[in-house]
Length: 280
Ligand code: GLU
Image (tube, rainbow, N blue to C red; front, side, top):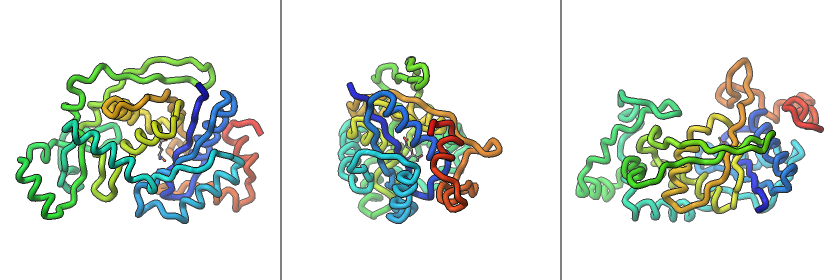
């Protein structure tokens, strides 16, 4: 089977060297393994992700010298795919609406999920069907959460295949989705979530190898559960080390230099490849 790789940035800011590394690694592996290289723009956050940033992202990647198959999948053009997955989970009785505010959830004092957010204490899971119906009819904003315990009840032991790009070796990794608690799968502000849309799209695009940063490694545990619940194939995964600056992950909020900044101070794409350890 021909390997299929993808780079899936969220166009909520300009790309930096961390994005460049991930994109180049995916394209490089696709080239070495005779595979395909796809691009997906994860713009479900339609407030932070603007058409201008989407275009800038495409321009930056083209400037780097990358080429990808067309058409590019742009998530905000595919809401019905995420709605179909939502319905599939709803008929299994695995989603429940949550009306809690961010502040209410932040006040929960229990365990934290792998992203450091409080594990949802299950407040809305205890609402009666009448209370839920009334609040929905009243138009109260709500997200939809995965009923984790129910979802795991009867599920087989979950695991995924981790592959090592240099040695091409693979191994089985046990997944522990319970550490995410009742994760939000449909956000309050947009009719999807990262976790749901990434799993749906990797399957729809026929992705065989997911190569992404180590900051998303723990999320894979949840993705494997969603693949099981939705009857989707599981790709292989490789989580690469993050490019850091003085020991810190690069990010827009920390004012990291963007590819556009590097370009405007005369750095060329060949230098960026070399800087990141890729051959010219
Ligand atoms: N869109 C995600 C991000 O920019 C990456 C998604 C993924 O590779 O699974 O962090």
